Structure formats: C-alpha cells, structure tokens
Length: 62
Image 1 (cartoon, one colour):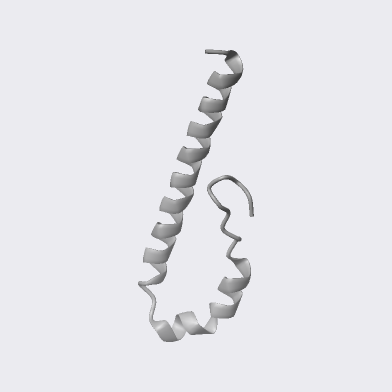
Image 2: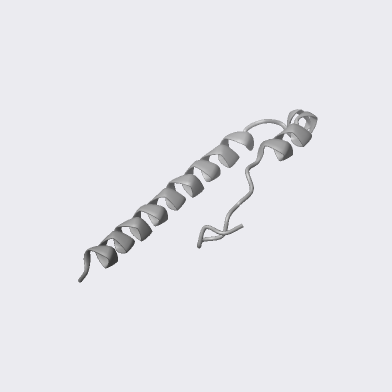
C-alpha cells in the first residue's frame, strides 16, 4: 500500500471520529437544554437559531 493511500485512510478515520465527537456533544447539549422549562427556552429561541452552526454533509461539502 502506498504512503498516500495510508494517509488517506488515516484522514478518513480521523474525520469520522471527529464527526462522532461533534454529534455526541450536540446530543449532550440537547439533553441539557431539555432540562429547562419551555417558557424560558422560548425567550431565547431566536438567539439559539442564529448561533447554531450549519450542519455539513459527511463528505465535508455544504
């Protein structure tokens, strides 16, 4: 196997692991938000929508 192929595999695994960490962090944040009463969350809903980063596809494109 060439060095380039090995490097591509390492990069793909690293990207996969990073995506899993981001997904886990996102799920944890959602669980924490659900602890608050809905009427308090409604007050800051607009601000939360403005600060949520755009989700990217698995291949890194938008």
